[in-house]
Image (cartoon, rainbow, N blue to C red; front, side, top):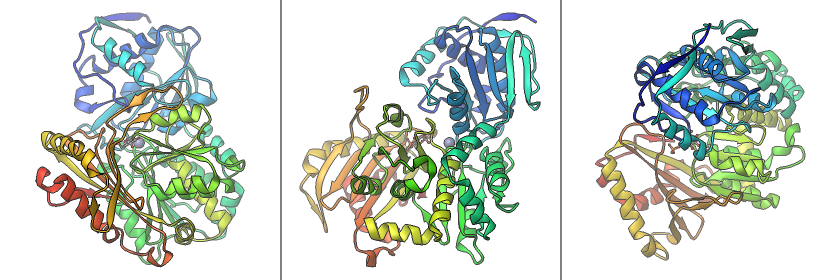
Amino acid sequence: MSIQTIPTTPFAGQRPGTSGLRKKVTEFLQPGYLENFVEAIFLTLGEGAGRTLVVGGDGRYFNRGAIQTILRMAAAHGVQRVLVGRGGILSTPAVSCVIRKHAAFGGIVLSASHNPGGPDGDFGIKYNIGNGGPAPETLTEAMFANTQALTHYRISDAGPVDLDQLGSTQLDGMAVEIIDPVADYAELMARLFDFAAIRALFAGGFRMRFDAMHAVSGPYATTILEGMLGAPAGTVVNGEPLEDFGGGHPDPNPVNAAELIACMDGPGAPDFGAASDGDGDRNMIVGRRLAVTPSDSLAIIAANATVAPGYAGGVQGIARSMPTSTAADRVAEALGISCFETPTGWKYFGNLMDAELVTLCGEESYGTGSHHIREKDGLWAVLFWLNLLAVRGKPVGEIVREHWARFGRNYYSRHDYEAVDAAAADAMMAALRAQLPALAGQVFGSFRVALADDFAYTDPVDHSVATRQGIRIVMADGSRIVFRLSGTGTEGATVRLYLERYEADPARHDIDTQYALSELIAIADSVSGLRQRTGRDRPTVVT
Ligand code: G6P
Ligand code: ZN
């Protein structure tokens, strides 16, 4: 066994985004494509004797093959030890947890999150640093620069490693430990939540449906819910991770998880429904005939945080992305704590958590989490809700309605216009920007514009500045219209229109959301020319 030096030439376009390098599987399968990117990661990190790395992925097509390559390259770059999830499986939150628990130098996550998998689907690779969170842009930019200057990569000719056998083996002098992908994560969850109370809840006949969407959270949910918490067998559906997610789109929202919604709306619905995405970091919370919006979920978790042992000491602060509804702000105000408003992207929460300014974070895009790790965490949110339901002894719907009665309801919806012409989308945003100075003070029907701007954020910890993060039109009563272009779409441009209207009166908390927002929807269209400019008469997806 020896270390080989293989000549190579750069590939264009290996610039990682916030979620790493995400491309079609067919692109990743080109000879040297993955190797080049991994070489760039190791060049950026520098050689480091004694380093431990964590490697795992969401089980999608090419997961196992990619891990074998990464292991052989890690051995060639002086890594001392690699922790790999059995079968190559580690959810994104589990990677973050394992890095932190074992004080690893960093980790490599193989996933394209909720993007479809399979030979024609997507694949992705992302580097996380020692705090368990995604690499900051300085690091990813350095990796990109390295991809553009490669002349060779180094790789061991040893292997392959048996990924299915727990325990330690050697690969060209490097220790490879195949670990139980669930154990460390489950142990952390058991410390944060009142497992005894949740066990008692299930023992008392409480019924739940967790839709793992044939993605990575299946083994985690099965072990924790059905194993440790005594939920009946069959609570977890679609629990076996498949390389193509069973042909589905593993993104938990009412559109993609329609089967779960139908079940929760139908006769004989269980008490509680939940779903998670491809790599296990997103979540959707569903009650009987009620899908809880991610914005409400964050606010409700914050208002009730102390029911969970891990948060019994209270919440330091809350952070939400700008387009996320301001429901959490009202809770923060009542608790007398700060609520930070950040640009879209979980990475903006990292500094706030490291500086202990916030405990809880959430985004409207079905992401919720806390300072226990540095990624959003789907199953964590589900376990929080179970803990809450166990302590309160009330159904989801009642908890949500009581929250609205106390804090008011933030009617909220996101309208996505997917795969629209990029130039038309850019022109719309430019026209909106040009209108901003004139918008403040204008009256539209029953709304008066109090603030209109292009959101900018100064990180309170490192003082870095992010500009052009979305057009905000904030009304005097707190209602908001927000326009953004998605940073994660792969085809053309995706326009996201976020709508929010506050209603204090509990007698008006049962209005259909789209109806409650209809006046704002009309204002959004007239201000932006959205439908005319995109040539679409309705959104592709409404959540
Ligand atoms: C990913 C990121 C999130 C982000 C979401 C939507 O899941 O991790 O932080 O909120 O994508 O981003 P987009 O730019 O498409 O609205
Ligand atoms: Zn994800």
